[in-house]
Image (cartoon, rainbow, N blue to C red):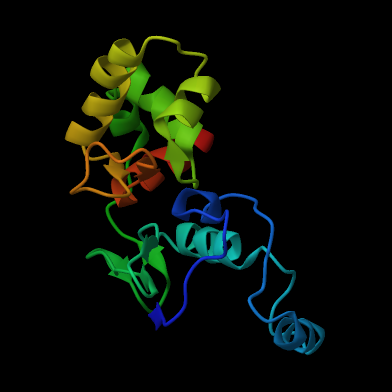
Length: 176
């Protein structure tokens, strides 16, 4: 889907994935839409969308701000039964038991969110950037559990990470 608009001042792509202030471009239109029941609460649209995708086993949505519009892409992964909404090929306890502890920790830290490197390191109480990258981030991406929000831009200051379908399956297994 695309929206021929732009993000309000102070709202970044990374902030969309967490709790953030809602700044409607046109409050006169936003209020009746809220009162009519089309939106539950101002500022929760993107987090609701992310939660619903995660709960259905869908890949995390991608939010992109180009020069003149915001694009949101949802991709159905193979292995999703559209009729039941169930993901096939779940990670089993046996597979989860074979995953490195550092990868388990980063999967549990990210969960259904999109987080920056700094946010993940804070959750994991890690201080060494190189250790984090070499022991946690790179192994989890190589094994297919974590993906970059901006895969073509390694040096973006707002680079963030989210769980892939495989990562979400492991997260669910580890939570259970």
